[in-house]
Image (tube, rainbow, N blue to C red; front, side, top):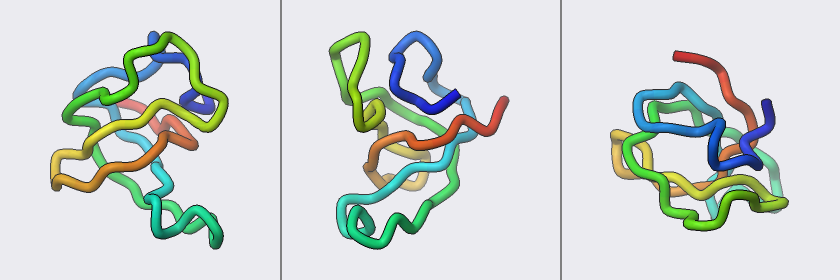
Length: 65
């Protein structure tokens, strides 16, 4: 899964996100989803989430539970 569908992303899920500062380089940050910040059911660049450590970015890969 690529994290574009809101129904595929939920709190407690392990994901890779791209932080705003890493959008040009594509560096990924791995973490656990705490909150979903995107309200729409689909976003072409990935659902925006807050990780448990407080970092915010868009989901690029779903790793698993």
